[in-house]
Amino acid sequence: MLIVSAASSWEIATKVRLGKLPIGADLVSDFSGQIEREGFELLAISAEHGIRAGLLPGPHKDPFDRMLIAQSQAEHTPIISNEAVFESYGVRRVW
Image (tube, rainbow, N blue to C red; front, side, top):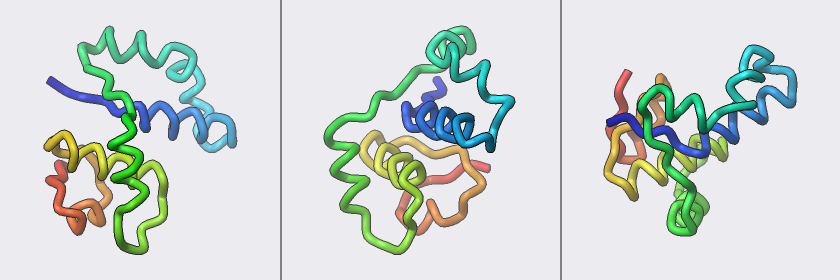
């Protein structure tokens, strides 16, 4: 089973709004539907995830990455990403 964080929808929508990801507009308009059609499971952001993300140590400041790291830690799931910095937070990174 593949899990997609709600933080991904937040990041994609933000990039669409800023004009940095115009091809993402269709995805944003039906994010949950697309996730379901692909057979993925959506992972909501919980209070535990938020607190964990807010308390993460280190200089990495990207709020989306911090949330993904916190969710990966809390849910004991790997992250699919090319961001090598994730490994310094003790999460398993695939890619």
